[in-house]
Image (cartoon, rainbow, N blue to C red; front, side, top):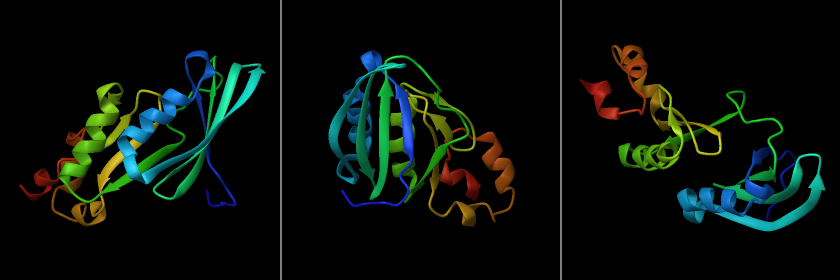
Length: 150
């Protein structure tokens, strides 16, 4: 994997501290845009069994860590936006993350591991310049592009 100067690290809690199910979950949705390195067992830590794995999603490197017991749960202080080409791509990510996660509003959702996502069209700035765009967005959970044109 290419070397990044700064690598975001995401700390998860998983059954037994194993990270393989977390890696598989994200690999399923990101497909060819996802690659993973070797799983590195860190052994017993204050959080129980711990493992790490470096991954790349859309060319950006991340370090994923999983412990057996929760330490600091993921929250709204960190989130990722996915700029989607069209409604089909919005639906793909939204439906995957909310299937076992939860919906919020304005394109925000939380996946089953607690990671926050904003699933938006790549031209969201352009859509927000349309009349009544703010009111449309505030009524939406998942972004429905067509509603900005009504």
